[in-house]
Length: 464
Ligand SMILES: Cc1cc2nc3c(=O)[nH]c(=O)nc-3n(C[C@H](O)[C@H](O)[C@H](O)COP(=O)(O)OP(=O)(O)OC[C@H]3O[C@@H](n4cnc5c(N)ncnc54)[C@H](O)[C@@H]3O)c2cc1C
Image (cartoon, rainbow, N blue to C red):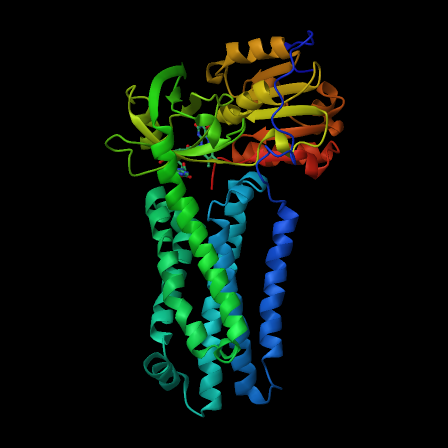
């Protein structure tokens, strides 16, 4: 049995329930399977557009050209989906979670960038074969004589550049902001490539309906980007007037920042969610940092807790009360709404405690139905110890703080056997997990081995 920790089964106070999903007050949340189905249906519709508009194919040139058209349609549709996933649409952010959306975006991005190259090669080659010329001279003809192809080529090259900057090896070398702002070239790339689809795309030239639907799809996603990434944050800034109230040291290299503002209930933030914070001081105003709420939100204040890693998080400790703050969000799907079972287990690793600390207070659960495992490498890394112990007593919840390295503990304390010995009803619980990537992967594996269904495991990564 785990030794370290507080186990309390006192009669507990039940936390105030957050609005039940489906009630008028519950914010909309998209279901991942439904979103994937819509994306797949759109892809099939694009293929149908090519299929119905293509006469029988004859000869190598025709085959190559049609393969080029098909990949072109896939790119035209794919970039819209990729951009929409990052449009910060609230139902996607709350239902799927920013980290999962970012993973889908990154995976889709790899395919789309490859397809852009394949599309250019196939079209050029196909036209060259049909015109009985070589690829070099056909490339020149396409760039000079075909409407909007030159602009689209620049757009394609930009997309490839963005893709290269996101490859793991390149990303490790780039500063986060450099990589982030390079990504904005995607918008320019999409704009540059848009018009060649209607100017020379066989599927659109003589099909007004297709042009209207395709154009509406691009305009809709463009409007969503403008609204949710630019207008909404500006409106929130004016409405909520956020300012730093206090900065408190929680432990070595960890500070909590309490932020006050007006009408914060209108944000509809939930325990377990995060916001992107922009602190308006020299050196910090130009970057927005994602930090989870480390306490349930109140109508007049929010709290975040930051571990000092690099330049930005170190600067947070020096923030002065009164500093103005802009916040975008809330985002994230690690909330009470994800839950399916009556019983809940929270598992935190290191600074991953922050969203789980908020959930430990707010997630509705009766006495004995809630537990928190907090894994740290040493006692000095524990933050919120007093708050957690107090909450455990108030709520009749179990709290295990497991500190120490594996070697000191005589092995991994979170093996399937250790988990089921200490939490015998593990498989009947929803498990919320937040910690370093290695720990998250290992614990997810252990939970699956302990027969916790995948749909009951909810995790959030602190990396996009
Ligand atoms: C959804 C989410 C919730 C988070 N919640 C918390 C929390 O509650 N407490 C906490 O201590 N940390 C949290 N983090 C991590 C925190 O945002 C980063 O540690 C912090 O931004 C690092 O900044 P830095 O400049 O100090 O470190 P750096 O050394 O510059 O960066 C370290 C790493 O942090 C990431 N990072 C840096 N800047 C950003 C940025 N603007 N946006 C996204 N990622 C960035 C990059 O992967 C980078 O490699 C969260 C991250 C995410 C994605």
